[in-house]
Every structure is written in structure tokens, then in C-alpha cells.
Image (cartoon, rainbow over all chains, first blue to last red; front, top):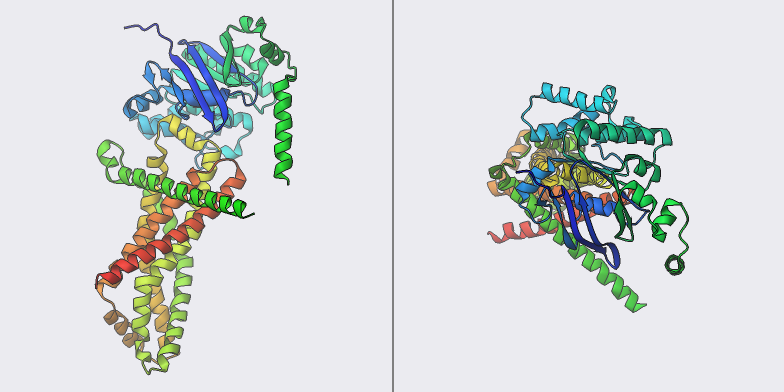
Length: 269
Length: 265
């Protein structure tokens, strides 16, 4: 039966590390086939939210369900099955350093399919061709540039033809040309495979280039979730400052800075 | 001042207890996966395990041989010095054989493997942790315990007893060289004395110890690696910590097992 419920649903997510509140009641729904960009500054909680979504970080409260399966309360078999339908491209690539690029892509294929090695090798080549990296199949991650590593990570994340692809800061640390190339690659992958994309980034240009919807997160709370035009027109002062690239000048930040300086002085004796 | 000292000591003690708790948890999970896993569609990864056995064994073989030979020679010389006054130099062979198989063979081998292989495991897994490779495995749907810990644990639990047997042999032969060259004993006489002095318990007791030491090195190395957070500095700290904790736990386990073996009689 066709379901109309969102493909990803986060409800009331709360998470603290010690006294620091990282996620403060996050509610977010992502529909099938859409590209959702989670936008926010450093330390806003966006990467932690992504880690909760893929099941790497258990929240203190709230729930995450993907295709109706709760990531933290479902049976391990169900979660394992679900994992085969999602892919994730990590910020630094997270390619296995002891394996070649081809072996990196082969790993999920050898684990979860019964394909013979020769066929898996062909699949790995096809996945690498999608990201224009087929010539790097026998190279080790240490021999690749930052951009190539990220593209290889996309190829690995695509190995099992996932329905949902999560990307952590895909264009961070890359030059503008390479970053724009990665944005185009994401859009191409989405067009070809019709995947749901969840992208965490702080790069405004990249976010507005690829997003169907944007969720802006600040101090663990979602300030707005809407289309790029809705976000552009959002009157919230924090959103405005972020979009206009203005440094924060609120009293809270000044207070935190003074506190941090005092702690630093105490540490230095 | 005293307050501060007490607070720091308390925090250090709590950290050590927490580390032991984490180690126990990992031992339980890895042990369960090794024994029960194959019946739950989580087979042991044979190729990876064999690679770990060879890696631990081959890498350590020359060093173990060298140290075992040196220990055998030193032990023979020291025993001869002590026994000469009693007119019992003929017992050098017995003493060397029993000391090496029961105690020094497994202990020295384990300490060398902890320094060489345990540290390498910790550095490898620590680097994988800080570069998000462990997270990547989890997201792909591969259990890092099954994929990384179990092969290393079994690998070391097999390699350390094998290396210990080799160290026993080299140590006894090195002791024999002292007997022949310095004490004027015949080689065949020395070796038959050594064999006659050994009982089955000496051998299996030593092997049992080596098996436990191997498991300790594997578990501590994996635990320290997997709990690494941060960057290159933390990888270094984990590596040091893996070696120190392994050696301390090996000696504690040695005391426990030696006591048990002693109480059997």
C-alpha cells in the first residue's frame, strides 16, 4: 500500500553533552524524493542531528524514524535491513585507508549481495563512473585529493543504490570550483536515481543551489524549515544575520566569550 | 592542596574503573559474537582472522626468538651461579626448562606482543575512529565488533600461544648452549634432563596463560583504539595506554593463574 507519511521523521529530539544542550526539541519531516538541506553555523547541532538520523548518536529523548522504522527502538535486524537502504557520505570521506577505492565500494556489495567478485568489480566501476573516478579504482585514499576523496565517498555511499543519501558538509574544505562540481554531482545523482537527499552544510551558496527545502538550525533548535525562497524572506534576526553573513553581536555571545576567556585564564594559572 | 590531590586521585581511580568496565563490556560482546555469533548468521571472518594470526606471529617472531634466546642464556648463567655453591649444577637444565615453560616464555612473549602488536592495533583502530571509518562501517550496516574486534581477538589468542611454544623451544636451546659451552655438559644429556624435568602441566599451564594474555592484548588494544576521540595526539595517548594497561593486566592475570596452578597441588 502506498504510504503518504514522510520518509524521515524526527520528533522531539533532545540531546545534551554534560551541561551543553546540543539538540533542543527538534521536529523535522522529510518527504520522499526531496532534497533537504540542514543549514547552520558551527556548533549549531546540525551534524549531531545528522548523526542521530543515521543512528550513530542516540538522543536523550525523542525519536527518529526512517521509512516507518524507528532507528533506536526497532529490532536490530530491522535496523540492519534499513541501513542497506541508506547511504552516507562523511565530511572527510571516511574511506577505509587500508583498502583501495574499488575495495571500499566492494565492501558493502560483498557484505550484502551474493554477486560474484567479477560482477562486483563491474558495479564498482559503474559507481565510480557516476562520480568521474573510474580511473582511481586501484588507488588508495591517501593518494587522492580532498575532492576526489569526497567523490569516492559518494560512490561508496551509492554502492547499494540507497533510497536516502545523507551528506555531511559535502563542499567543506574544497575550492569553489570543486565545491560547485560536487553540488552538480548531487543534483545529477538525485535526478538519475530519484533519491531523497539530506545534506548538512554551512555553505549558503551550495545550500541554495541544491535544496528543495532548507531547515535552519541554531543552538539546537530549528528556526525555519521551508523552501529556499521562504528562508530568504524569513524575518528572524538570527536567520537574517546568517544569510547576510553578519557576525553575531548579541549579549549572550559576549557573555559566553567573557566566560570562555576567564576559564582560559584560570587554566593558565 | 590535599583536597586537590584527593580529587585528582579519585578522578584517576574512577577513570581506571570506568576503563575496566568498558573493557569488560567489550570482552562480553566480542566473546558472545565469537561463540554465539556463528549460530546467528554472524560468522567469524576466517580470512581476516588468519591475516591477524600471521600478522601478529610473523611480525613478532624474530624479536621473540632474540629475547627468548637471551632470557634462556641469562637464566642458565644465573641458575648455574646459584647452584654451583650447592654442587647442583646438573639441575640447571631442569630449572631453565621449568621456569621458561611455566612462566618466562608466556610472560616475555606477551609483553613483547603487547608492545609490538597491541600498540599497532590501538593505533590502527584509533586512526579509524578519528577519521570516522568506524562510523562509516556502522552506517553501512557492518558491526565493527564482528568486523574488527573478533578477528584481532582470535588472531592474538592463537598467535601468542604459538609464539610462546616457539619461545619455550628457543629459550631451552639457548640454555643448552650455556650448559654445553660454559658448564661442560653434553647437549643430549642437557636436553634429556630438560624433557625429564617437564610435566604436562608445565606445558599446558604455560599455553593457557599465553591464550589469556593474547586475549587481553587483543581486547585492550581494540578497546583503547575504539575509545579514541579527537585527533593524532589522542591516537598516541591511546597507543601508550594500550601497552601500559595490557602489561599491567597481563601481570595481574599471571599472578591469578599462577596462584591457581600452585593451589592445584
